[in-house]
Image 1 (cartoon, rainbow, N blue to C red):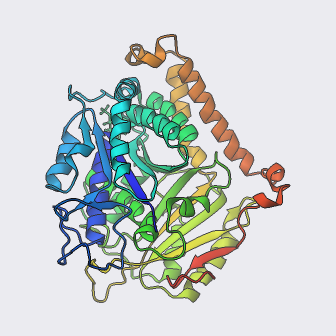
Image 2 (image 1 turned 135 degrees about the horizontal axis):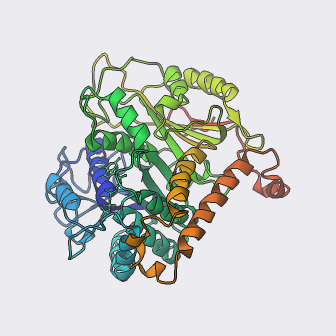
Image 3 (image 1 turned 90 degrees about the vertical axis):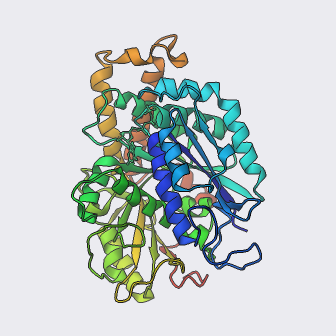
Length: 471
Ligand code: GTP
């Protein structure tokens, strides 16, 4: 039985993205905004899809997201609750009594997290009580504000400490290069330390790449978070497709992510997506009716990536694609062979491209004459270094001058000085060095001496027909 996953959305960004994620999931599982099933649902009705990993049934037979919503100010959570009247469990949200936000300060968010840690862990325990086979968490947040980054960081520490065996994933949004607030690089580096040390897998997005994508995807020339968040939720719903429409492979968080993560340090994954069909976005521009062959190859095109990078020929450590729609197996094999020839895989990496062929939800409207096939890629690649580099450079610039540190001086973590900044910066430096080392042929020599540790047994693992056969 597929395990249950608890989603924790923190801060404005986390809750706004969460709203789109739950809209997408509700649409794909035939659930109304009030939590009622749209097709005369009853507990005895047999579904082909599996709502259980992400929804529980409440006493009045409504689907309730397995979600916690946390914020220091009310607007984002209230917006979610208004949009889905009665769908969320009212006991599963927390807004600080002061309702003031963290004013972009990581340390304020972190201290609120510490002060309310028992309360949050109680909320999580209550949520776990309504599971039979609890599998893990997904945290949605931004790394740059105060709440998602600071409170999110303290939660990451608390969760990995309390539930070390449960899989902890994050969907982490990095700021655009024109960051609105000067202390964002501090928040980002302090949060990156927790992502590096406490999360099992982090899917990263950056607002630069997202804003570029939105101007290509949407007819509306004025881009907003309303747009970027539909792109993120398209990626999130595709990553979880094989869990919610289960098949033999990739039906749990560990089974998806363990194919991607060769060593615990290399757990930052870059998503890409194409095309954004009307299954995922509203108000999108028309797109070509591409074949699965074209879609798979397009996924490797940097312009479809949700993280901008300047690496000309990145080194790939692993790749996972999830294709959803009508698919020809031959098409897929041809595209994978081509991609494997084109991509620069790390010499030790077995050049694996893992492919899941997911199911398109039967609840989505069928569009005659339109090919509704779309694809998601998750890449574990050295190009993620660009993302860390941008944060490190801006951090170094201000930290070397001791600039803007006042915001942090009341924080508990900083009562004895600024060591935490230097240590976090060092953790990120080590991470960059680990990615650089992973480009080398000898990276896994020590590990591979032990046969049991060999990674990537197949060149291609896939379930192209969604018929549970491994090819
Ligand atoms: P405080 O406002 O300090 O309490 O913290 P917070 O975590 O609530 O802040 P927020 O989530 O607004 O984080 C700020 C960063 O997130 C900035 O880089 C914003 O550009 C980005 N951001 C905020 N909301 C969204 C959103 O809905 N989508 C995306 N993609 N980015 C967002």
